[in-house]
Image (tube, rainbow, N blue to C red; front, top):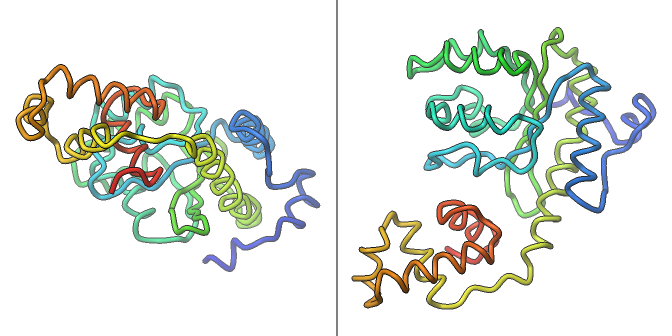
Length: 245
């Protein structure tokens, strides 16, 4: 299957008049992805780190997307990451594949097939494809495109598959560059480490011999340094940046 969907960057440029992006910012990559989606008659794109088995939300794994915020919030509020056939397949295989929101979600073991299918239908992403990706460090992700058009043919799958690794690597490198000057103090690292273990601020204060106010101060400072919205996202970002084991 992987061979069927293999193509070169030169072939992509010849057929579609564009090259895989080596761009200067995430905004440049987003603009390029929007253009590619439109060129293929698709409605939206999604670039993610493949969620680990312990992930409890989908949003923290998203690198870039044109999905509406409301769609991501609804997805997580409904707990659709659990039992997702798409995520399960991404964890197990490196081959690209197409999806149909109705047919694919019928395989959900959690009884939420209708909720998931309706969500994708409502936002015009009922059909599309996922293209697994990885970078030289072995970090795994995926690039996806969705819309309402008929299923992508093998040639189109090959064209889009040629982009996945390069776009994924580009965005991961851009984010690593933004974080390269981030340093955490010993206390900030300790507090994030205990937060990753599921400890509350009260529990951390007892473990570390600090006041609850001081623990929250360290957590808030680390969260700001990592440009995160909360301590959960700060933990995820710290792990990805190699600042936390």
